[in-house]
Image (cartoon, rainbow, N blue to C red; front, side, top):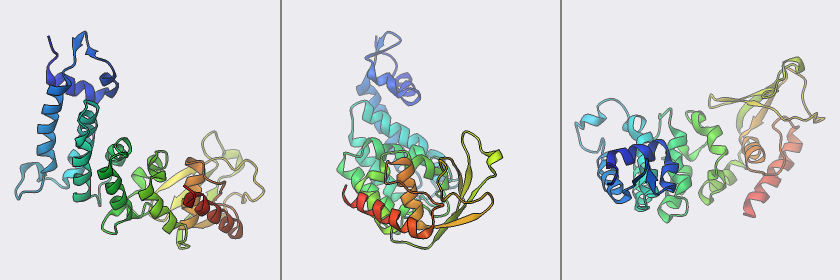
Length: 265
């Protein structure tokens, strides 16, 4: 006896590794039935807000209310064997309004990571991170802080699409934020300093490792957009060594090294 489709979908969404096994609870997984149901649910989801007076779009941006579930259903459908879901997701995420979406960025970007081998996803990544109409075309912009740190710890910064943004940013010497070290007595296992980005987000820093250029506690060190990108690549993507607190001349050398490193990919 085959397990009910609804339970299969629930199991897939909650525990994606379910699909690595042929059975759940001793019963055969009917992936074909799951795909059919997911196709129907997603068909409705893609169209939320398209028609006037759509009851599902009455309360704000549909992406905030349904985007996370749409992303999860896309991944579930692909895991069941229907990877055309990635093509539909690529079209959807380029069409919807992402500006002002204040949560769920990690989930919205998951299909971009998992489906990166698909041409449609590759094109979507290029659009999302480079087209001026997309709020993600400037990763450091106000409103993007909620997904920024998670993003830098994924494969997305090394995609061809995002590298275009990065190479532009590595020539941008406008102010991006400031860094301030705490007194040494307040250092702990996770934080030595606070990084504040101009867009409004902040993050902790640890890893100065007695660098001779480490500034004294309380001294605010401003950094540029090019510095921020070189730092993120260094910190999270095994890029050339770089610190935001270095003297500007030393940072210029580090930014150039990061640029050459990216261009060689």
